[in-house]
Length: 589
Image (cartoon, rainbow, N blue to C red; front, side, top):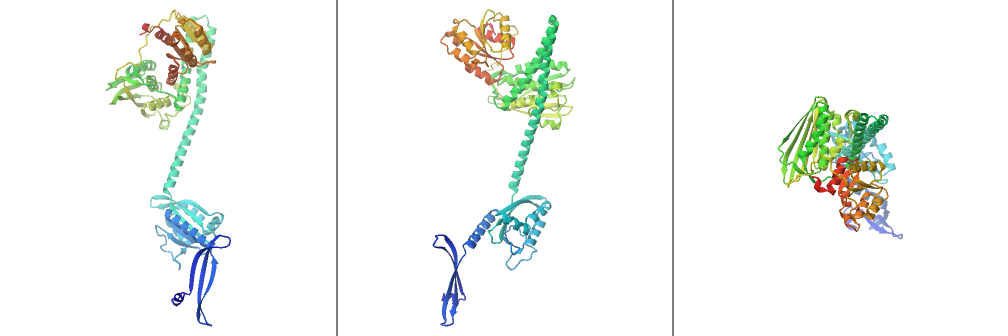
């Protein structure tokens, strides 16, 4: 102490953590005041202590806040609310030039803020930032909560950056921590997210609107063929003795039925594709045969409108491929029929098939379809492959389109690993280019045998017909009995099982089995028949008849033990051929 006093240090301060009777730690400041007692000339010390727990905690909090902000924020300042001054803790780019510094090194907050806003802040954000950081507003806001923050823009030449200010209160010390941070990455990410959300919302709204419009059109388009069928039935009743008139009515009813079935199939297919239920086959097929079968149908449509079709094949080395021939045919049919449908009278269509590459067991094919039709507007081109969209209201009535064909086609092509590109100009035409990879059928097996035009004979065969719908039962009974077969009827799977089980072995030559039935469906009935302890249970041909013509339905039929799968509405020749092929395969080529 004497040394301190002689050195001119008359006050010694120590800060320590102490525990009192309540066992609560407190921070105390102890001060020893050195002085000479004039009565005895002795050096004496006056000791007193002050509890500084609260102020020390405030200081430590402030230091912690400043350290945190300094590590993350670009600029950090201390704002003294009582003195209305600003002290610089950290600043990457000086802003104090031209400002008068006070004795303690601080600056006038008002002048500092005005200079910062004028020189750095975007003109559109200056009034806002000046208002929220005005001293009285800072006091008002910081009184209600520990901190507040906001965003503003900084203009640097032609560049615009996003910044965030943050104001933090330090208890009741009257000192405010003020930080500024560049948040370009955060704001740009938010802007991107908002843009994505808006695009998703727009897409959802367009899809919803398109579905609403589609359902409105479909309600009309479905009624049209139904009304036609009902009307023709009334006409047929009236002319029941006129053979020619009856034939005409049947033809019109058949056309209307096919149109209605096409509408329903497209809706079902779209639902299957959207839910991922469509399964692609991997079977051998001949691409040339499929293309020719499509052209045979399309050329008749084109002739009616005097449209010229030209075609050529370039560099095709592999016609025998492995894939999904049903869907390949559908893709071709959709594009080429659209080229006819949306073409002008005396228009032209150019078709080209090109094998563009071969690697290992895979060949990539490019199909081009160019027409001189009505084309598409730029606006509609952006939504061409969206479900339920059409450029024209009432397009089905005029062009025969549901607005689902292109969506289905694109989904199928994508599932096959391919892609579709196109170019179109309003009133001049459209060119589609479809690229699809296929596995090469190295053994050159044919996928499908050409159907014989002659009707196969099933005369004398004994057939068990299982069907729960009276109309369908009547149709199939007519087809088979008219071909000379003997028919035994069962109205559900359970009844069919009982009839077969009670029959003599070898009594039936084949079973025509509906799939969806009450009591017991066709799958379960087939499985139970196959498990019966008799020879013919394992060998009798069982043919599925169902409205579900998807690949997965065929697989389910095979798994149940069925030999063949025929889609409804039933085609007479296909039914007879299926039965004949299974019962007498030597009679069918």
